[in-house]
Image (cartoon, rainbow, N blue to C red; front, side, top):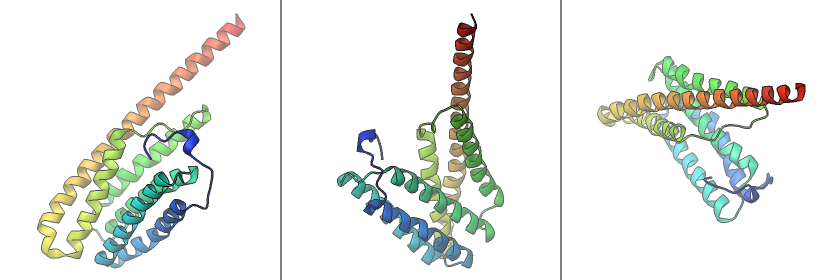
Length: 205
């Protein structure tokens, strides 16, 4: 949502943008099922519908000031689930290797662990780094392009190398961003421990 002020974010649940986000979440299992069954053309159609609703919910939220805390959680969650669904479906069909799925999911598991550690020290999630945004964008391009090559073999000669270029670059940036988050989390935790030790020494003295 960009640089949204905290005062502009509501706690409302029943908003049009949130309903569109819920629709996107409901489309995820449909999307996964279509990929596994090999119905790539229909899966791409579902992805287009999801992309349109994603654009609309952001536009409506900003235009009519319906930005909500729930929406800020649902929107990236739907994005992640669509990526995971595409990865799982294509891996099951052996279009992509399982190691690519493990690499991407493994990075998010690491970030989940970082989030838990930071929460134990009283911190919220780290700000989203631009590298993470670029990595996600690369994966958003890569997976549909690879699916396009499966749905329409005549364009596979260009879709496959282009899709793999985005996939490999996206996976690399995904972990680069993960390393940045890890370094920042270590820095924050160390600073907290130093401050706590200084307070303890002051009180003890």
